[in-house]
Every structure is written in C-alpha cells, then in structure tokens.
Length: 197
Image (cartoon, rainbow, N blue to C red; front, side, top):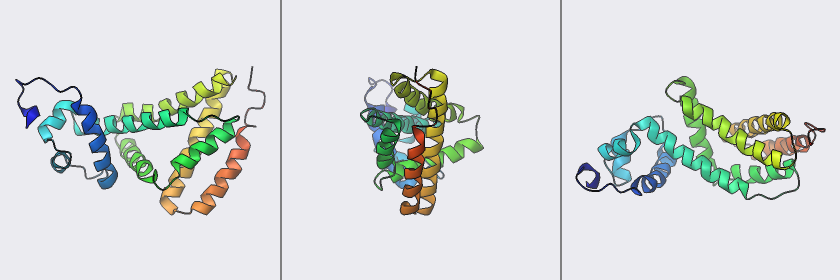
C-alpha cells in the first residue's frame, strides 16, 4: 500500500478523504464492535495506514465525528430566522429527519461509550458539549444576550435537542415527539425575558 512505504512523500489530503469514507462505514456498521482490519479494507486502506494518520482507533472515531459536528454547525449557521424558537425549529427539522437519523445514532453510540470510558474520551465529552454551547452562545450574543444568560439558554437548548433526539431514536414515535418539541419551542423565547442588553 502507498502509506506503508515511508520513503514516499506523505499525501496530506489522504486523511480528509479517509474520514469521509470512514464516517460512512461507521454509520453503516457502528462503533461498538469496530475493528481496524475490516474498516481499512472497506475504505481502501490498511490498519497500519489508519494508525499512521489517526494514532489510535479511538482518535480515528473522535476525528471523524468532530468533522461531522463541524459540518452540522456550518449547516445550522446558515439558518436565518427572527427568533430563537424559529431557529431551533429549523434545526429540529434537520436533526430529526429520517435521513439524518444514522448520524444521530452514531453520535449517541459514541457518547455512551465515552461515558463508560471518560478518561479515554475526555476531549470528546468536553467538545460534544462545549462546541454546541459556544455555537449557540455566539448566535445569542449577536442577538443581544449577555453571556451568562446566553449560556443558560444555550444549555437549555442543548439539553432539549439531545433529550428529544434520544427519545425519537429509541421509540420512533415521531408524532408524539414532534408535538412535545412544538410545545418546548413555544417556551424558548421566554426563558430569559429580560436577557437582552
């Protein structure tokens, strides 16, 4: 394989290409029983090459899911609405769509594993919360919220999304969950009524 010959120049674009193929594999096969050999074969690489680029199986998974979250963040950043509730409503339409469900399930699978091995997945656990909090806080700050109040609202939003998504993945009761989300959205713009400067 190309990567097994260290005398050849390193292809800097290869890890980017690999992550896209790896993400698709993880969506189809999950993480719990992940083995590098079948993964490498599926993405046209080798276990040695994957370890060369990602250092470990755990780092490989974390790197791929970090890319997935960045892509989601970029997608959400394009949402333009008048209120927080409207923005969250648009985000819910994306996250709860059947096409998006495999990514949501993959995230929750890794989250569960990370909670059982917090030292090994310390950075993932932190970023899985902090990245989304900061993304939401940034949007709220631009809308005039003070940082402390923006963090309160962002925490409520994050907890709401993850709870509803976990329920939807577990039960597939889309009608019930969507009704609950609609009720929740109606409360968001009144969480901190005096929050704006």
